[in-house]
Length: 364
Image (cartoon, rainbow, N blue to C red; front, side, top):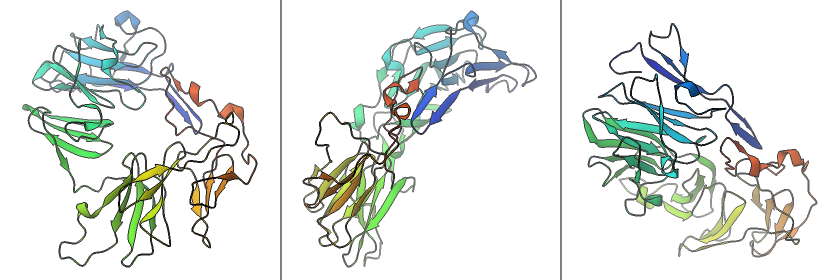
């Protein structure tokens, strides 16, 4: 909505189909529509107005609050690009189609404008890039994986103070961060319960510990309770491995050790005391056979023998030495449908296989 004219609305429509094994972004249903009379009539932006030809995918839109005739659109198309209008959306010009405008449109495609500076534009994606020249060029505001400022990657929400462009709030896969100096330094808000746990487990210690794997935030171990007036503090939790955390299986005979999981069938044997961990991911005897692992692959420990593990791909794998070696104890037990194993073609207008599209796998 135009902040100075509530009758001017811009709506981005997105045609997107997702199957468990495939997704397609883009189609005839995608497009940018504008009304100047509060929704009584709408006009679709087309190639005649400066938009790209052919099917479009996801579109991010932003209006400059201090100069509402200036509108930006981050458009997924055959060639992804940033478009700009300086006449309230009647005519558009492609101003940037370089990689610095962002990646993975189906997952991000977010664009924001400083409310007091129509030329300062933020593209919010795996990282955050900023332009000071109206989108023609971008530089990285947040280094890769927070190397220098501790901010988690994968950004999905962004807020700029309407009267102070240096005051911004960032929402990402790691939580919420605030800056008041234009992004030079960030403060992480650590008391918001926004983590997404896939699984939880407990060990046999007294008092016992709780384990869990979190979406894009690793696998963690923490005390179930403590004899301290302040209760359980954030600092009492220990990250035991990295990645999209799923199951954690503590060794029932010695909770110092255990197994943690992440995407693509990765399973690691960890030592919680030293912080060390290493991969014990199963392989197939035939190197030409590609193992298919569910996004959160199935793992379990033998209730009668803590040395024995079971792990699922399209096969059942068994280890009797804590995961150091594995053997197959089944044939392919899935449908092995080749039509549901085309992850390398997934994405639609922009090829993108997240790893969650693996199919013909064990889920439990």
